[in-house]
Image (cartoon, rainbow, N blue to C red; front, top):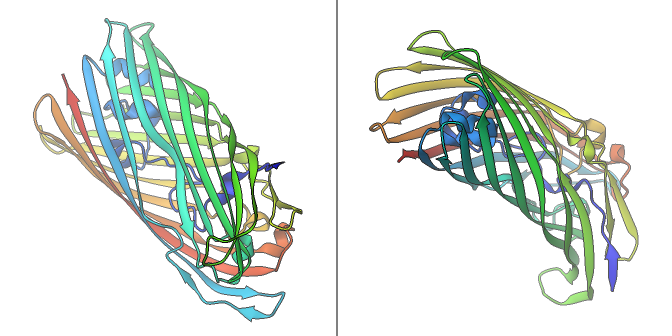
Length: 410
């Protein structure tokens, strides 16, 4: 038996707080750039990890380079004042909705000649896991939400002139998602799982006015996924099926992104940078699911395109140590009338710092720390028009990011 599960807004599987960045985008792809709150990431090209933000920056990576890194994401999220208006029942506060995770990244590059450069990178650009207690009063609207996207990107850059470089790459993206809910809390639970492999592309340019100043422009395409998987409905606390598993298909498109950055060195000690990014979340419109009763359930998302602004500075302490600092504003994709228990999104403020340690001319390390404060978010399912019991709640959350990377030049 096959049915169509269309959730072009599978973004709703992300959670209760959107701790890192708008929607479910994981911006944490470079410990060095994180130290500046990703200000100037499109123009910085300070080491190989910056290639994720702009492939054209490869032309600044002479010889053969390796970058290995990762970010430990430690969120803190809570749903308060939970209330089921349909049955007049107040629910308990829900703690630890968003779980900790590690976002790894790695890349290798090689200089072919004076003008041509190639690289291969592995990143996790999208992902999150959230989990409520199955018995919570909003269980029919969502319990567990998990998604992981792993992207392999071969890229190429070419130095057209002494000042202008262009770069391009192919994104080969594997995506796996799982959603669970409790249409009858404590009695019946349901889950939807799917996975897919699809591809997209990216292009970028880097213009160096001189040795001190450069600007970058980059575009990452959307990746349209067609997931295949199963829908399962079981009695709670057991593997006993309420109905046979159903083959499902799902459509999920990760958003396109346009980024612009600038980097400027005042002198041998001080540098400043800035970044703007537009994420095209408006491609997420609705969540259309066939539930356990055999009837369609439609969740309207209507996300908006979001803006990310960041400014930062770096100070060269001595020949071995560099200090980085930055702050950013990250706009929410979901507005009040479209928040759900899976995604009560809100605006965020980033505060970052970091250190670079140059061990010798070949080996260096980057360390970074970020604290993200998210504005409190009120959720009212009646406003979304998605059916089911009317649930309201207030969400508060924050997150800490700990980044570490190793850079080696052959």
